Amino acid sequence: MNSYQRVMGTLLGQPVDRLPVFAVLGAYGAKLTGVDLRTLYSDAAAYVAGQQAVYAQFGFDLVMTPFVYTALSEAFGGETAWSEHQPPNMKRPGMLSVAGAIKAPLPDPQTTGSLATVLDATHRLADIFKERVPIIGVLPGPGIMPSLVVGMERWMETLLFEPDLARQLTDHLTPFFVAWANALLDAGADCLVITEGMASAEIAPRDLFQARVLPLLSTTFPQVRGPKVLHHTGGRINHVLDLVTGLPGLVGVAIGSKDSLAQARALVGPNLNLIGNLDNLAFPSVPDEQIYQSSRSCIREAGAAGHYILSNSGADIPLATPPENLRAMHRAIADVGSRSGAWS
Image 1 (cartoon, rainbow, N blue to C red):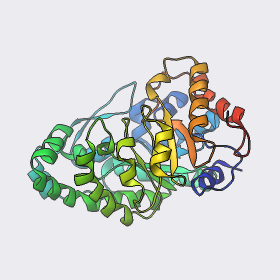
Image 2: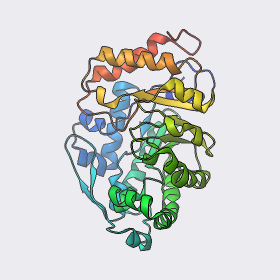
Image 3: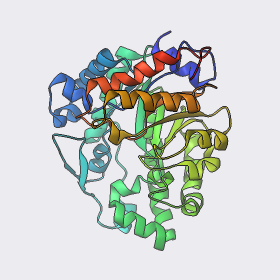
Image 4: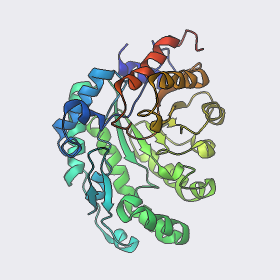
């Protein structure tokens, strides 16, 4: 059974040879191939070489499209801050007012700057890995995407205090969100992870998510032509899980490292896939035995009934993470056996 069959079988609740295991290792590819991060994210061939190296060295059950949200902020005129040690961040948003953003034309995913590079990399990944290893596309959700256009502080102020203006901006950006999601799928992504920061308890309370963001997800998800996983972007998500289980095309949710997997399962029921929930910050700083034991704990808590993928719970795993800490996840999976084996 290859990685693609294993993950697809898990998502569908079918018997598999072992639980799948994910790790978000986009930037880590640069470490393995010896290129700087700016080259990795600016050159489709360099990025794909990084994913090939990650898969060859660690054998996780996925490859990823470039997890580089500055491609989106740049598409709206933003500036990027580059680092030697982590993926790039937005330095300055392209739009200095919400009113200006509403009037701005939407970028074309096929031809706009770094967006075209992301699609090129996705095509190349599909040429190499299609139906052998799942190709996971990553994009921000429609509730958090405006922060890449006008900045996080301005977006939150608008959402909280000028809801009509906020609605105008999300209405304006929704066609771009849908177009970008479908462009990733058309380029070869098998599944999309939608990182909706507004689903995180650290960013938005339940009532704000329910009133302002859940309707966006309910409207946009049916327009996206592929399976979707909802991600919290690094915070806690259990407080809204009962609200999202019926979203069209939703096949899984990523669970935060501070969330309880057992509680998450109780909230979503037996058939929605759970992904997580190892702490990103632990990976570079603790012994591999601790990663192993944490992985075993996750598997005991969530793996027995299937519909579960062991994974880190945040974005990119830090570059300083020792290889043995990543391999510890595989060791934990191997030691608990197949779906039909013991999970203790």
